[in-house]
Image 1 (cartoon, one colour):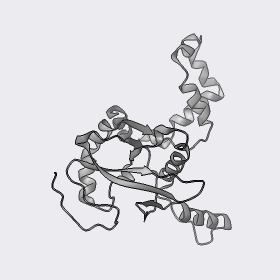
Image 2 (cartoon, one colour):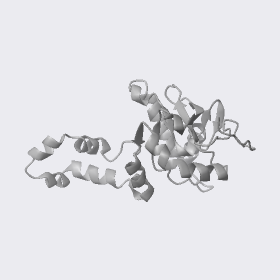
Image 3 (cartoon, helix red, strand yellow):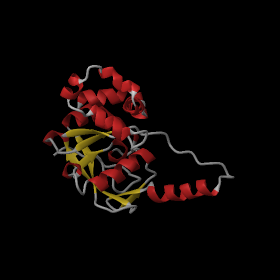
Image 4 (tube, helix red, strand yellow):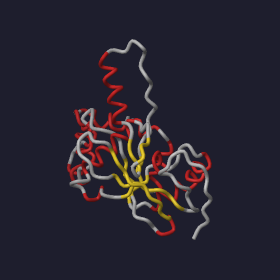
Length: 217
């Protein structure tokens, strides 16, 4: 068994990671706007664990508004405080950035009908103790193996907006459909073209590391 060194942790759900181990989380069932609960556990990369690695854009931390914010901003802050904490093995963890919280909430909702989403996930912001500098350094070094070992790398581009459902419909059409079109580039003159352009302009695509993840997958 790999040697495990103990150290002081600020968050009780995080225990020290033995060599070549990672944490994975499973999103527990829940309904509607209820709190998001996850179970976190340790697995060894040497044992080919079954998990999905999530690839997503962290996004910027949200800034507080000015002191004279209107009632709408105040309501949003209250909602933010209610929804941006998740629970790992019963312990509250937060704040969780908006983009990741949206994924967790939607994955929990869809998992009731899509069995493939009923899986363990490796999500860097959750599975790495972000307050532990040595662990962050060690786990970043493991990232190529983490993405290579995963059963699947799931890309989260964010919620539906700017007709993103239209763009995905077009992009997933079979190759025979495009071969049959006399002018493939005519799509850019239609609403579907604008939707595809908007999807390709999302923050997810603006970081070089994203393309490295895709290649490793």
